[in-house]
Amino acid sequence: MIVTGRHLPRRTFLKGLGAAVALPYLDAMSPAFAASPQSASAASARQAQRLIFTYIPNGVTMEAWTPAAAGSAFEYTRILKPLEAFRDRTLVLSGLAHKNAYALGDGPGDHARAAACYLTGVHPRKTAGADISNGISVDQIAANAIGTSTRFPSLELGCDDSRTVGNCDSGYSCAYTNSLSWRGETSPNPPETNPRLVFERLFGSFDAGLDPETRRRRQDSRRSVLDAVTGRTSELMQTLGAADRRKVDEYLSSIREVERRIQVAEKDLTGLPEGLEKPTGIPVTYDEYAALMFDLQVLALRADLTRVITMMMGREGSMRTYPEIGVPDPHHPLTHHRNTPEWIEKVTQVNTFHMGLFAKFDETLQSTPDGDGTLLDSSTIIYGSGIADGDKHTHSDLPVLLIGGRGFKMGRHVQYEDVPMTNLYLTVLDRVGVRPETIGDSTGLVEHLTDVTA
Image (cartoon, rainbow, N blue to C red; front, side, top):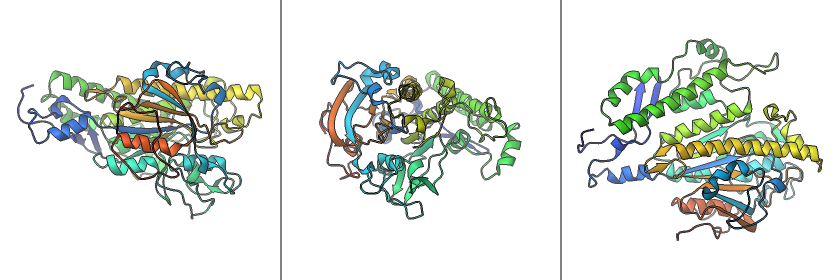
């Protein structure tokens, strides 16, 4: 490629009829000369920090989660084992708590409070009506600060239905049970659970506003989103160097592969009970479903469409079954095992299954180039649940992992004692230059995590 004083803008889209495909970061997006006025923005693009919050429902088998020893010499437990390849990129954190998820005089409803409190640190108002009240969540605090330069300030995803009205848990609104992200006290951000709709939101919609029957009729004749931008892609490729052409080709191939999997899911009725209608675009098996939602996150991050993501691998109180791993029983009832060994074993299998799917997501982030490193290098991921022991509905000593995270001393199991989970959020935000005074019940930054000074 001939070096000139011109460079490709970071916010470049391949546009066609009904489609707009953002590009990943390319060498051509760097200014040709360091003194260029755009050099600061290019450096910013290379160093963009991403925050990802991945939630698992109904708690875990804590005995199979928590390492026996603290420090860097800890052994990976059964549930954590799928993540062992990322030892030097992981912090296992014990002793963090969400005290505002306890009843505090409100009676039953731990699942609703666990989800509502998880990213806010606020005790939600107990109501099944329209007068919901919670607090702004950490992802939205981040989105308001670091999400303003991307097409989507934040992205909210899930793998279970996301109703926001009605009673979902002992008098608590479904808005609490099904939403992690809150723009404000009365404004939840319900997660999008349909891969097709996520894809169309990211890259353009051919079917926006159509009724389900019309959408189904169009499936067989649906063009690829990439077909709509073929001409613009060819023009762009002629202006790029060999390395950038390879990056664009790999990226567009990833988009096409995700789109193909969605199309297959739309037509696949294998294993679906007779008479049950499957939502368009959602795979029948959970592993394929979760993998699609994780890969959509990778595409969004790779194109810098967003830098803040929340993902609910399941909503609180989820009744999902997992026949693909030999667990045909609904998840939530299993967690009320009353120390029955067979039930505990099935819960542990589900927990380990979730972790395996999450580990594959981390592998993809690690293998995806991003500026001077990889997507994992520029991401801080918090993985965990708002419930520890699902049988007792405990909200102290929560299962928490931090993965990636520049500026953190990784590869350790760090033990605390009843430290607010929101203190971790303050610390994570601090590392990306966002410094709210408080989040929910926070009392300050957590200690012993960073290897650099603020």
